[in-house]
Image (cartoon, rainbow, N blue to C red; front, side, top):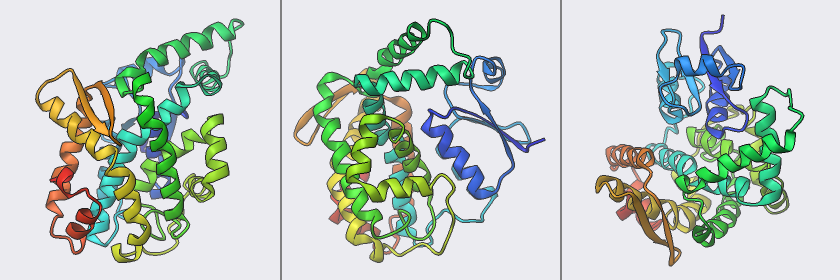
Length: 330
């Protein structure tokens, strides 16, 4: 019997983030796809209705992908996914949270915000839910799934008024990420970090959807190649230093992350702490407004605490200052 059990779905980036990490670490586990057939077993074990759900041999349960990766890293140290440059280790945490909380918005927007993509996504979700045993009324079932997903879009900030922020953020991110990945096989060198697992899981979903897949294939070939390598990543060498990575890593953080995710996360945290139902912020001089996300606020608070603990890492303070991120992470 497998040591761990992982409930997940092929359409859940957080599930695939954890699954790929388990495989990379060589951890024995059983993958249980969430479907109508496994729903009763999932509900019996889950504390919240979201994926993934990892059940350890001692029956500990965890449904937070970042916490799962951190815990597994502590238990299974090799192959290591924490950069030995302390500044890079801190930035990897930043990129992981960015992927989980902001890039996920871009993915969800691309998948469910436009008709060709949401129809294809609805078909995939239906096939997963019903274990491939499709009903006669396939279109009706698919449309019900699409409606349920679209009704939930405002909860993650996917609203018509926010499209003017999300559309350029998608293209800017992947243009900058492509430039970075032309210089390094993984985000921080010759082996993947936790940030690679988080970000590639979102990219892998985008490559399932026709519109973003076409854009990435045409304009971000290095991103596509990296994403494919992250299906079964191999640690081919060491991590690199911050100095070596900075020429292309700094623009990614300065021109995208410090312009979108950090202002959003800061405003969302302030709204959560004030118990405000909605948050609003200017991103790229454009208004962005959505329901306050309390889980994301806790994650960002934890990120700030972790980065503060590493504030004396050589080169980190200067890098964050140059990136325009120091004040937002203070």
